[in-house]
Length: 328
Image (tube, rainbow, N blue to C red; front, side, top):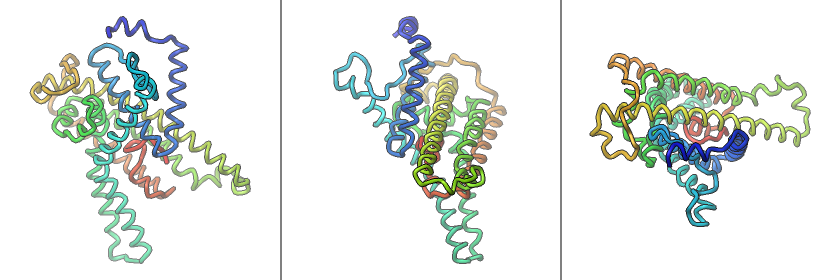
């Protein structure tokens, strides 16, 4: 489809507003449970793929459907094709993310368990076990967190969830990302702050809302439902922004990387062309890569502090920015 024809089919202002509202509503509702959030993860992955293809071809691509498949297909594919694609992409992406993040999230969970058990049993001579394991997990988390947005975008562009583990190509993209990679990390950290604050709401709800303990159980449950809905809406919106920026960053950096080393990208399914700005110099690349590690340290601290405010063992593994778009 040419740019002109795509522009001719673009909906008007009211159509775009209705589409954005529908996306926010569906994304929010589906982010309320871990199972349905897999659909959101798949949709976000497919949206990243469309964004990357649009940036590389300079032709706007249609947004993926939540339920409907592409036009011109059979009735069944048209009716449920989008849903099926979201399910497939969601499970594939969730499996890849779990494989990518579990090495450090499992260490965090083990460190908490070791610290809790040691404290409960008064084993002061083993007091260093928990913190040591947590620091080991954090050291492993920093580079993985820094490359996570590019890994997701690379997998979306390639159409293969296993592409998140292609370290050589991801390293090539990261070295051409420049200042945008640490900037995206800082934005991720900033957007994680409200999720951290929401994690602490149960611990401070009594002081913030006098009389909360006297409310009938039905009103308390209704209040919890509204809070969960707000958390889901925020988590989905934040991920929509972050994944979109990650896709744009990948399209730019991967194009520069393809121009620098065409052989490495010879069999790539993404249409790459070295037509963007020149990559940063070697010292600048090293500086930006080092700075890209810092936001992961802040996010690790937020996850750790959040667990002290409102513990749930699954939160070590399922932070919305690391695995499922489900705030829990």
